[in-house]
Image (tube, rainbow, N blue to C red; front, side):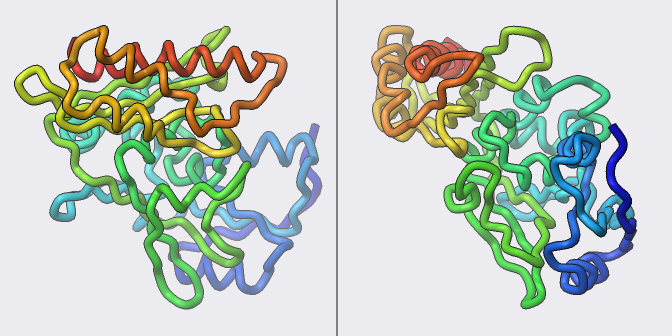
Length: 284
């Protein structure tokens, strides 16, 4: 199917993009890599009068260090994040998740900012960003503001990005030396995860000193498995200890029921995948 007619704008700066948003308001849609928006346009599920393409804003691309954090431009492609040496060294969990995100074609076109702003609860990057304690830099008419990952995902396909604002950067605290793993369950290759678990673990002398666990597709937003995190700290990095903690993975969740699985099936998967992810991250 062919999209309805729209005006195409290609600003070369964040300021120009914000001005275009202010001018066109609800009639405009922002396109980053296009991997989420283009199918919607083709199926005519949305028919904006104006499409604002951020692809020409070079300042929104790339990865750099800023003290104890990595700063990833919102228009940085999945492929670039996956292969960036700074991300591999300081945020290995993102690499693990990006490696399993869709296929090579989508990773070359899609962007990290576009995926996170889309806020699909089955998306592969929400749970890792929560687990890593990421922060989101949002630009608007009044300047920029920074929102913690815990506050960024508001509801199904809804984030803290307000009307007339743009996501410009993702700030990821360095987790140098932490073990990491992303465990994803799908029926066919490249499918959205039925459930996935992102785990980052710091082990000292065989004991889990810190643990951060994010859940994918266990509610209307990505979620932190806080009960698991609390249960893991101070425990030996052994299969029995991890399994006991992982049994609490579904606490505080509200998994959906759909054609891929019922809620109780996802509850079971969350426990199994959490055990696998934590064990792999802990090197056990």
